[in-house]
Length: 90
Image (cartoon, rainbow, N blue to C red; front, side, top):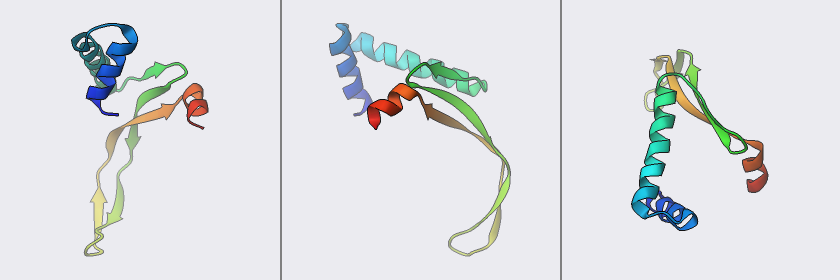
């Protein structure tokens, strides 16, 4: 399912227009992005949680040449599924 299909499904389920559903989805995504940018966390009980994880600097190998390369530290988004979501999927 892509964002357009999700918007249509949300509009159908809630009885709002597709424009309103799109605004709601975009609003939720913007809020999650803002929280993660600031190092925060978003918890949707039963669904899951979005957070930011830190990755330490490390060394790796260039797969083409085999040379050792330094990989800098970084931050990346992380999603952990909640119990209800895990139960639905399994």
